[in-house]
Amino acid sequence: MRVDYYLYLSAVLFTIGAVGVLVRRNAIVVFMCVELMLNAVNLSLVTFARLNGSLDGQIIAFFVMVVAAAEVVVGLAIIMSIFRSRRSASVDDANLLKY
Amino acid sequence: MSDFHSPSIAYAALSPILIPGIAATVGVLVDAFVPRAIRWQTQTAVALLGLIGALIAVSVLAGTHTITADTAVAVDGPALFIQGTIAILGIGSILLVSDRSPGLDGGAFVAQAATAPGSQEEREGAASGHAQTEVFPLMMFAITGMMLFPASNDLLLLFVALEVLSLPLYLMCGLARRRRLLSQEAAVKYFLLGAFSSAFFLYGLALLYGYANTVSLAGIQAATVSSGHNDNLLFLGLGLLAVGLLFKVGAAPFQSWIPDVYQGAPTPITAFMAAATKVAAFGALLRVFYVSFGGLGWEWRPIAWAIAILTMVVGSLFAITQTDVKRMLAYSSVAHAGFILIGIIALNKSGLSGSLFYLLTYGLTTIGAFGTLSLIRDPDGEATHLSRWAGLGRRSPVVGSVFALFLLALAGIPLTSGFTGKFAVFSAGVSGGATPLVIVGVVTSAAAAFFYVRVIVMMFFAEPVADGPVVATPGGGTAGAIAIAVAATVLLGIVPQPVLDLANRAVPFYH
Image 1: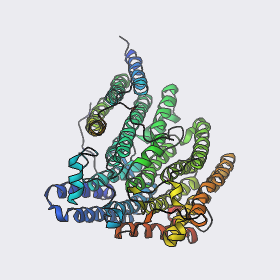
Image 2: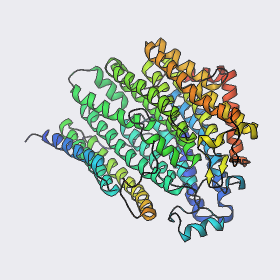
Image 3: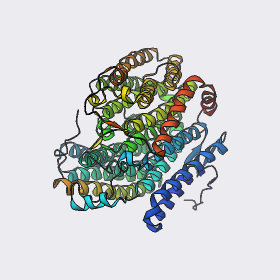
């Protein structure tokens, strides 16, 4: 079985995540799309590790997971604080800063 | 498969990174155990001690060239110069953060970040006069990441350092005491866009790993000069990696977050971001492009030219249209990112040393400018609208002339540090074959001088407004930070040679 199909799959997942960040309005969903992008990267890292015959890619994937978990903590704290003051998590409502 | 060998780590060479990390950890413990009455002072002392310790470690290590932690960290001249710069800028920022004098209405930070704006709990917290001190450990963790960022010798560590410096910054943006909705909005925007850009950085890392079968910068460089690799992976990976790094330095077209976040964040944090974050990110950018991709200059330079020109033009032109002083300084920092990019594109020794010197001068002037800005106050916080500044220099000549000095240095007028920095970078650009780029740089500097001088004219030659803002008496922290910045701006403009020599001796990268 050819392994490089997984690279195409990860590129598709990454693109879906990137488009999601750009078009979705709810900050939580935007954030989930960022997580999808990170996991797409993990898939390509593991695939490259298989293709290159080295273990580094699998180790890097673990680092990415840990960093993503830390990012979730910080991100949800920020989104929750803005939700408490505005009763909305829509990124379109946060429009005081412009021009 | 070989057995696992633990890498040897030269802890002494890593001490500029470790000492702020230790200070941050101690800061967390201080927050938990020290009585509330003396907590703020203790935190300030711990943070300042950590930074002074890091500065001493840098000066002891000067001249070291070593690669440690199994090729992951490079301690060399440019890394140490950047680390020293960040330690000095960190001291200035901590001084600004620590100031809670009555003139500044109890400081820039909210008593309890968890309370909703306008709620009963928020009013009680503000009335009690106490404040949580989480900003100090957050600041020190961010500085730890910044110390590691320019010394990272492989892409994985670069990514980890990027996140260690970014995550505390996202939080600190949301801690403003006044105009909290703006502050929280800035935090959300910075967080979502920052996470978006680090995903791009990471995908670039994955593709370069697929290309070179390693993530060490030297390994990628070795792969670019040998044959038998897939060049599509290389250029896609390089592009995506550059998106992540250029986002952090605020280069166009990735600059859209800068004005919003700089305006919404508490002013000491804005000063910290505009100075230290930019220095650290440029340090990493310089290392990646000089060490890994220096041999590919012909391939990436045309795109880098376009980005540098776009950054200079966008920064200068948008700054002209601003009516808010904080936002104007934000766009001016975009323009400065474009000027420093010329030093990267030059891709020679004088480009590297010129960029290092420019970063030091720009950072110190920026800290001083934002520190002075925090003194001009209305009843509801800082008066940042330009029209409110009319006649300020007549009513308060000292503050007016200090701010005018910083603006002239940012504009690059001779006898200020800004001129020396610009001259170093532009002359390196000419010798590196980027003369057209330097011409664009000079023209946009002239356009930029217009909006700096406009503020000075407003301060000194316009009639004072009737109910104009008051000029607060700074506490020791703010006064100290501004004094350091004034001294550096004047001294580096008149006698720059010792520091220029230091920057010249710091190059090149060791790998």
